[in-house]
Length: 327
Length: 284
Ligand SMILES: Nc1ncnc2c1ncn2[C@@H]1O[C@H](COP(=O)(O)OP(=O)(O)OP(=O)(O)O)[C@@H](O)[C@H]1O
Ligand SMILES: [Mg+2]
Image (cartoon, rainbow over all chains, first blue to last red; front, side, top):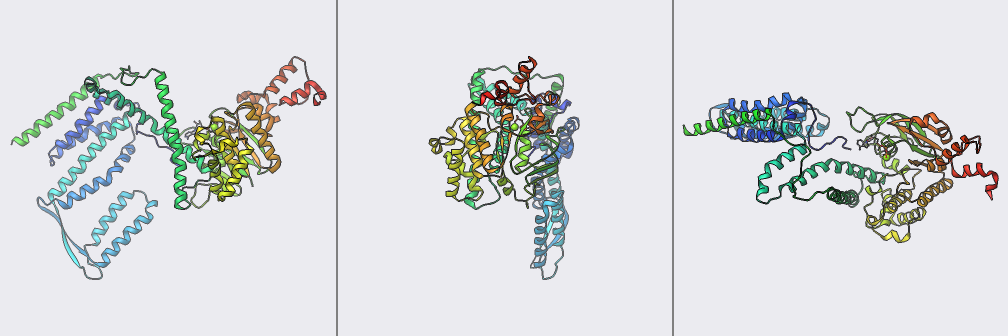
């Protein structure tokens, strides 16, 4: 069973990045995100500057680089796909590479065989993504030669200069954004994040929208995800000892077995919610009323410096952008 | 046969520095054992018994249950193991889900391949054994009190009719009379069927009265495994692991210190103590 799922990716380390105020981090993330989209899509130097900010944070956060790579892995497929799309679909600029592709019966069969084989043994492979990529390239390479049997169709694939540039730029841009947001989630407690969001929503309270209720709801939800996870595990075990086996039985039986998991889960969640509501009320929580905070968020010198620096960079970028249009 | 552990280590989280089971070796016969597992909160009792039900798997060491080696492996069917060894969980609210109590008790036997009719018969028999009111059988299990729900869970395990029955703190939430009734029921069942029974309990009076063998867990280690007499006469051990004496034994020691009574072997139950105080005359 899943042993070590912790919701939220927060990892405690005593680093300078962890100590930055969550509001500062949130603003910086927002500016980096908007910023990377404002950078004209052939200006690699500006993008590298934008990338440098999260990179520095990664180095100072004292968190192992593998943790970052893990969250990048989840989105690697999307990144590769959009890269490939740019590469083949963008027809601007000089032709860099021109490939003749032959579709013949043998080629297609070989390609299918390779893919089927890959999916069969994929469980036992390390670096699945990279191997898959290698295989795709291998298959493309094979398609260059008309093997046994005539090619019934021949096409040219051209890769253009702009396609390559835009593709790489896109990847780098997504990389920057993901890295920045991963840094935020790895170094900031979920509760601190909701506190920060709470703070940003404060102006809405002025127009009589009780934002604190919503942020309270969010923090409770975040807080209870691991708890619910543990409960589910316990229910699974309790039912397993009563002979529930999710891998066997007819369809109807399987449905029954899932019900045996879902019903206790709902009952326990609802009971928990009721207990929690009572406990909160007993401790004087009144929805929407003003509350004091256990940890007061306070901006320190470092926060001001960082905010100033990011805002300066951001404004410079906007000026530049306007300049580019003006020219 | 029965349950055999050899140098079992277990951790919940791979990176945890602390083991929840640390080099545990034990052997439990399939017949006529009545074992209590004691130890303070968080010492690993529940973790230990979940290994006996193939719900958790050792990180290292061997576990053999009724001649089947327990490993996490698709090829090994765990269901037969769970048919041999039944487990009643510490918290019954994690398992009840059916619309009526009777259906819920029938759920186990049906999963282990009994027909609906047979399952119903077994369920009714089990519910009578644990002393559930017949009127409760048609109620929704969610409307029951904590103690009633526990009885339903115990009946559910009895209905499966395992060879070894493990109960994780079965007497919690029962009233004094209910406790005694439950323990008497388990004892009677053992006398009739010779099944082995294992209970986890913090209640030394119950442990002393009903069980024969005691295992003491302490931060994941099995630090004592022997007869109850051996444990309760070993003062150093009791002190080291913060274990209580049964009330009768405690009282007897005080009385002996005051030279009011004398005995050769420490009385562990109320009955034994009365016997010492009153002599044979109490038999009348
Ligand atoms: N699902 C879990 N994930 C991580 N750690 C756990 C889990 N369940 C139990 N533990 C830890 O394992 C240790 C042993 O727990 P266990 O439930 O076996 O104790 P116990 O002896 O049954 O205690 P109690 O008398 O309170 O029932 C404890 O330190 C507990 O925090
Ligand atoms: Mg326990």
